[in-house]
Image (cartoon, rainbow, N blue to C red; front, side, top):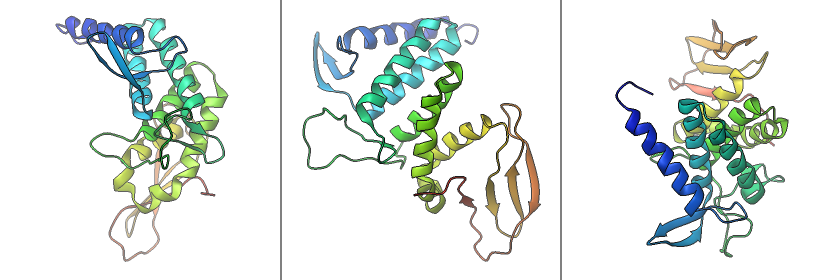
Length: 220
């Protein structure tokens, strides 16, 4: 979008076109790799999550509704293949993936945000833009499922904290607390815009000097 970077935007369009045309089956499922016109392997959770996020960003940069439609389609397919409603989580492999000893799921980040965290952010974005309440329900369910993990190891899953912040921005009125002992409790109240209003209140005494997070949702 910056002046003088028009070629970058065209490169992004070309890359998106390639992935959607060459690395997607007629049923809408993504494939893992391509080389010399040969594809192989079913895609994983992160592949769906990051592609959907990129398509949303491409829509924002170009204004082309096609990319938002594609992001919606990818996300819906991701929900169908990876989401476990009973456990309120997205597994790393799809339901129909080759049989493994165990299917894993995590919200812990590595060099990039976890697939679950990126997915929650995508769901929240699309729930607003497409008025899709089901997406919002799934996003909230995943946040609830991992709220204790976020409380106990916030530094290891900061992507989920960003997703929670995105959720807060969409609430007409919400209350939550970021606690810094002996200083302040920051409470987001009566949010009426995309930017949270913050009110400082005295914090409870605590000998722990590390900032901790009190979850908004009770974890099952």
